[in-house]
Image 1 (cartoon, rainbow, N blue to C red):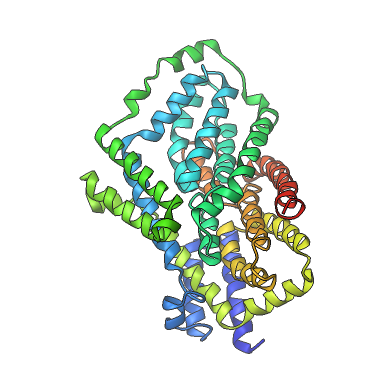
Image 2 (image 1 turned 60 degrees about the vertical axis):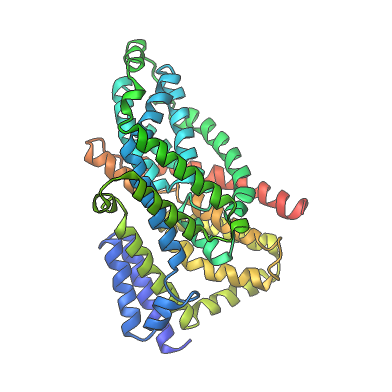
Length: 432
């Protein structure tokens, strides 16, 4: 490799360490790394801002903006609070039933909305419910994070790593549904069984408290009926367009941003006020990350890694998929899965192409998605949703420690990733 390539690797490694250890804010680390890459000549403005292969992936950025606008409007209706209170009443105040329903609601919502947004909306209601039932809130919050990461695995828009994979691999919304939704449903059932064992000490039933919860009126949570109806219609239309985007010849990013802007216009809300709820730091973080990854592509580093990975697996597709699955799970446990997938997606693209880019070789993309998304559950810093919920708990005076989260996360990750092994083998090899 050239001197510039080694310098790019060094810059990327330093930025990665800063992101992983949170010594400085991840946005500053990503933008700083991108700036240095431009200064040392590892990339240039043309590649960084206008290249599909070696620059900012505007499809990902625009899709996220669109979905964040929809959620920013939707949360003003009280819909998520309604769902949580409804679930609690249907569980008749029994803590395990409450957890199951909250887990199912969280996983379902995370399939259609960003999992970070879902936990942000569900968490405040969880505090209310746990206070009324007089049970510890930590197990419920932790279970919801796991559910959001598992549920988000099933669709293109459910987890940010999937958006990156779809953009790089040219995969559609339907591809994710067909290939990942079946195993995610099985994982969710297994996870609910794990909850019964892992959090059993939190399921103390108090009939007096249960009666108090029954007095909550979920209808009171809805703050704007008209806006709720409009939001649900737009969200349904956007979801349908995601499913039909190959027929409509519209990219998911176009569908999302059109849906977000239409809902914003119909909502009659102040655009500036709604825009404040868009996670601009997250979008800027993505941009910086893409510029750094692009510099590695531009200097030939990714190509060398790809060649080494392809040579090591020597056409053994199942072996390659298992290395990707478990390697992604381990690395996503240590480092946030967003920068990990952004780094690995060019490598996997080269590996898929080396295998002839067949329908069977697509298993490498599914192995990457499953490993990265499920591996994000392993530690408190493995996924963005984890960090967000720990911050909410701390601000509410109910802090969850790194190891309190991680001791459950490691078990959930090992079990869920292990269950995907027979699925990948049966679907893409034994029955292919």
